Image 1 (cartoon, helix red, strand yellow):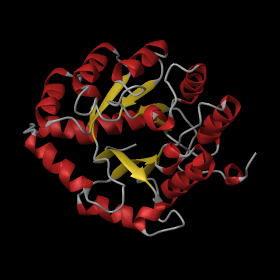
Image 2 (tube, rainbow, N blue to C red):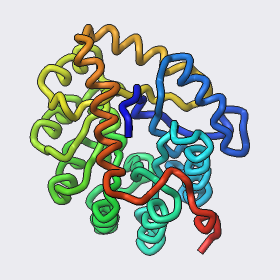
Image 3 (cartoon, rainbow, N blue to C red):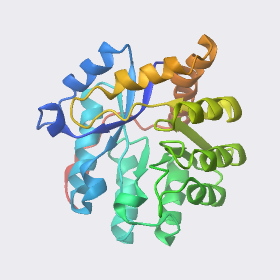
Length: 270
């Protein structure tokens, strides 16, 4: 996989883009406006309604397919239903060509300490997928909680999707400094916090994201202005938005025969 300018934190909800069939054209237009080549797309509706996981995962996967590889899809699972969660996790990789799974423990009401989470992480290790987390919101989405899970699964790559947001960025920095399998997407901390994370965090495991995808509000423009305000060197900015995310995606797909094209069989309910 070549190196691209990547937004590592966006959300997919076709209804927000005036589409009902996973048409990514308006989403891709927004990337083009801001000179971005790729985006990681995270499910949205299913994080708030477990009953929509099956359809939402397939909608996200289809958007990725129709984008011809520009949108990198992640799915999610219902940790409260273990048989379903384990089956859907496998389908996300074997049939839907996902790069990993997104968890929002606060919205989904599921602690990272559930035994099912460890079983899901075992499957993530098997397929080389990432565990992507909303972090920075108590009681279930604290960076340290995710760090403890990452310590139990050292061969799985974890992503802190917000680097602790406004209040828990120090905890996020601690996790990043002590867990070599945890990556941080700087999307939400204050200006001073972001600069500290960039100075003291692992330079080879930090990325940038916009949180774009809730309607057509231009979060990307706002986050890019934040990025410029951090006054990074050209080399550090390229590392954050190009080299690190490109390397992580290469590692996910390295040695894998998975493609970005979902299998037709994945759309049939079990």
